Length: 110
Image 1 (spheres, rainbow, N blue to C red):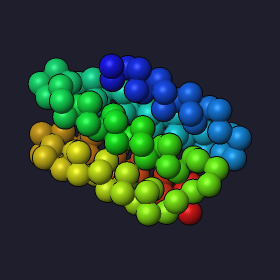
Image 2: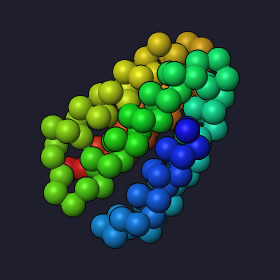
Image 3: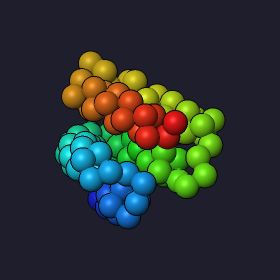
Image 4: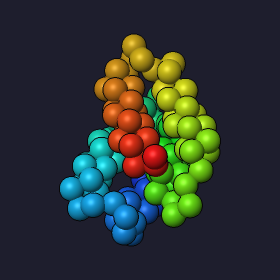
């Protein structure tokens, strides 16, 4: 299920016409890293990995929708951040990656 979520995120980014080519490549690279990180997390924390991927998908959706709602974007980004908070020590790469994705999506969504 995580792979399907990651694939949906990638498809949404690729299909969005308002994101420039360079920004798409940056986001797709970040999503590729996210795939590796959540797959590793899923080995020991399956439900948490699903939450991280789900909040990432919601955040991408909110940042790339045509009629943006800043409050929904903020809530989805906050959820994504909260989903990794417990793993700051054990998975610092995932936490840093989520922060980078969140900053990138916030800039797209405003």
